[in-house]
Image (cartoon, rainbow, N blue to C red; front, side):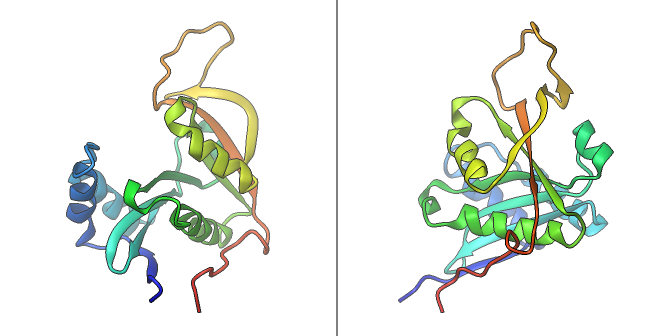
Length: 181
């Protein structure tokens, strides 16, 4: 029997479930983070998409309609943020499905999607995924806490050292339902 994947908006019952799932793998993602995402979603400043497999939480992604990265702000580019798929659900195409839906949401408001990717080895798979999806560097260098890193500066190689990428969205790059028929 085929597994049923659902991609849907974050709802009231999700923050505790998501936080507990990440706590179960040793990741510190507090309930408050997802409650904030839910409040942002209700305010229209963020969309949070949740993936479930046979009804079980598997991952999520957000679209920040008001990013803090200055070039995205200036160009009014929505930013895909915080793509996470639980380890037990990876290599099943869920990240791709989440990104498809995020791009579909963005394409209703913008012809360009933005995304930031960390530079340390923990982001290797994400870097490859974004490149294969057509995301390219924005040509402005790397940022640390959303500020450009000047040549010769010393920074910490952590989650906040980021290269920002963009992708032009077209009719062919938008959502394609890949679920089994």
